[in-house]
Amino acid sequence: MQGIIKLCFICAGNTCRSYMAEKIMKARLKKTGIDFVKVSSRGLFATGEQSADNACNALKILGYNSKKRKSVKLKNFDQKTLYVAMSTDIKNRINGKVIEMKDLIDEDIPDPYGKDLDSYLVCAKKIDKACEILIDKLVKIGGEI
Image 1 (tube, rainbow, N blue to C red):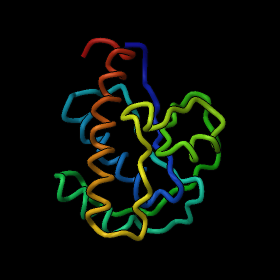
Image 2: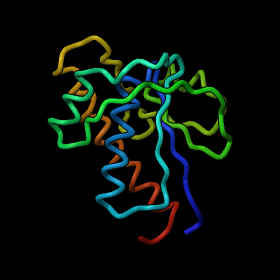
Image 3: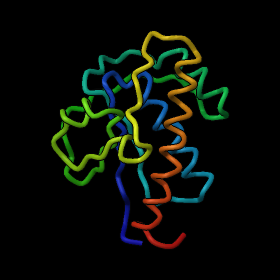
Image 4: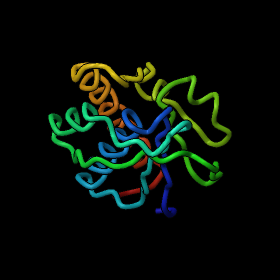
């Protein structure tokens, strides 16, 4: 293993998509026994809002940690962090090593902000699939587990 990989999920507000991605990825990494990836999430326009209720509800339904937290704004780009943007629009605003969900699952993750629980569940399921694929790629980079 080459060391710690820092991974940061990015969306607009950090109350829905990137928040859910962080929770899902951390749980999947723990379940898989991977300890060489440090996961965080940020929002380009985050204002310290609490996680969206439906984001928490969707995570709970899928069996993931749904503890609320305040959104965190991305202030500085760290050249040693791999950023994962939820959409092409978000990717185009980031200066650094960045991939987008479309690179993993062939589609952007639409912003469910303000929508119903079903919209959040659809979003969370897409994120879950993308995290599964990303873990496979990280294992190849990080070495044997």
